[in-house]
Length: 160
Image (tube, one colour):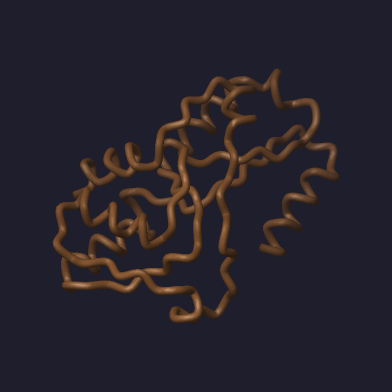
């Protein structure tokens, strides 16, 4: 997080004509990500433990890319002063709730059990609440805020 903030501050303090878009919990059909990992594990196992006390807004990479393209095409709205905007799909869910919905939509029978963060140690500490409010960027650039569940369905149907 510190290096991201450093990069953002460098851009904000420069004379660049730029926009910074913060996002969260990005997933897609490509690369390694939480959704693909859950689908793979859901096929291999009968149950999984997933953290239930960290909340965020899942973001489908395709929706993020479409939002970025729409923003880029409207430079008159952003090219004056560098600014930070938030963009994610609409809604809030825990990792556990997200994993459960992945299993449902992928039609996998794997049971997802809730655990707390202390039961799943990681090298880097994770924040408990990373929900982003996309209202400002969506209103300014006339973006469509897709609910995360609908975007997950689009991704899984194209991948699965």
